Length: 345
Ligand SMILES: [Mg+2]
Image (cartoon, rainbow, N blue to C red):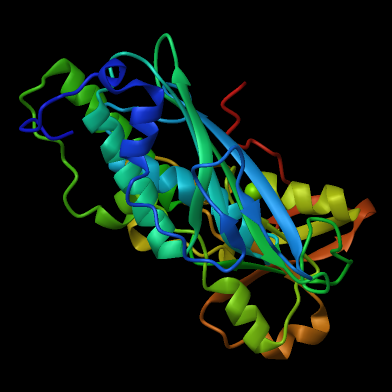
C-alpha cells in the first residue's frame, strides 16, 4: 500500500462508484465475451464448445495474511489459483467474475492495489473480468472468484479416467510454495518480536515467488495438444501431491505407486527444508499451492512424453487393490496419507 496516496474511504464513493473506479480499465479480449461488466449479467457465447466453471473463496486470516502478502500479489494469486483449475480440465480460461467483501480498514486505494493484481493476471492469462459483487464485511477481506473456460468435448480431462498401468506425470517442481510460506511465517514471527529486524529473505527468491506470485500452467494444454496427448485424468496441485494423487485414484477407481526419487524439487526448496529440518518430500507431498498439473497418460503415449522437459514421470497407476503407495528411496512401499492443506481442519 503506497503511503503517499490519499486514502479514500469506500463510503465516500458508495458501492457503484467503487465498482466503476475498480473496473474502469477493464477491456474485453475474448470473442466469447458478448457483454461484460455493466448490465445485470454478463453474456457469453461459446458456440459449439463445452464450458467449464470453477469457484474459489479466500478469507483473510485463513487463506492469506496481509502482514506479509501485498494486496497486489493477493489479487494476482486469487485469479491464478482459479484459472489453474480450468487448465486442470485441459481447458482454456476466458472469463472471471470477482466478488469482494471488505471491512472499513480498507481504503479505495488499497482495493485499487488488489485490482491492479487482478488486472495484471487477466492480462497475462488473457481472461476478461465480466462481473462480480462488492459488499461490506465486519472484520477482514473475503475474495471469491469464479473462472469460466472453454474446451472441446473430446479433450476435456476429468479426475476420473486413469487406468492401471497409466503413467503418472507432473509439470514443474513441487514443495517450493510451502517452503516459501514457512520462510515468510518465520520472518513474520521475528518481525513481531522485533520490528527493527530486517527479514532474512535473500537468496530465496524462487520459493518466495512460488508462494507470493504463483503462476498457473497456461502452457500445458497447448504442449499436450502438440504432443498429441490427451491425459486420461488430470488435477492441479493446490493441496499437495499426496492429496491430489488420492483424488485421481478415488475418482478413477485405481491405485498408484509414486516414486520418491522421481518427485521434482528445486534446490532452494531442498535447502529451506533442510533449514527447517523437514524432509523435502514432505513439503512436496503435503505442502500444496504449487499449482502444477498432475496427470496420467496411457503407457502408449510414453514415447511422446519421455524426452519432454516440461514433464516428469513420477509413478504409475495400479489396480485399486494394491493401494496408494510411496516407494521410498530405500525401496520400501508405504501407504500415502492425505494431509492436504485443509484450512478448515
Ligand atoms: Mg483444483
